[in-house]
Image (cartoon, rainbow, N blue to C red; front, side):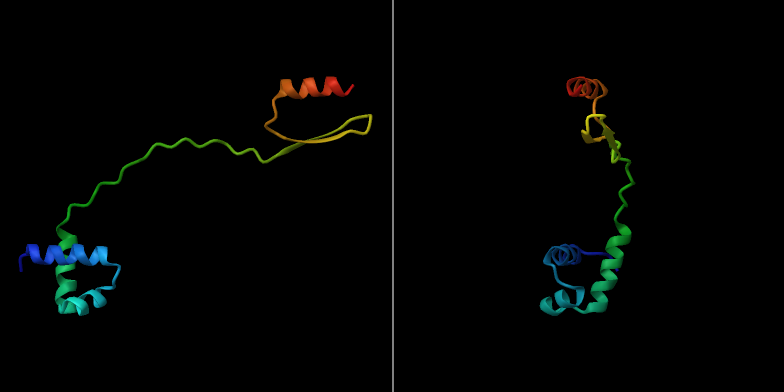
Length: 95
């Protein structure tokens, strides 16, 4: 049987209704088996959308820490991503 505009409309309305197939068919007075058959036909006729690769950028997560123990008793816990030049300045200030 050809898929008529009436069935296409019912399928689209059902998809947007939030109802189960059974609930939609009951509300609209449709035969559930006929609806399921038309839905199968509808889905098999649609041309599938080809898969597409979406480019993403992944930034490495740094979870490590640097722990410094200074001779004067200072203890610093810093993320491993801390700037080396900033760390050098900090250590010079602590002396």
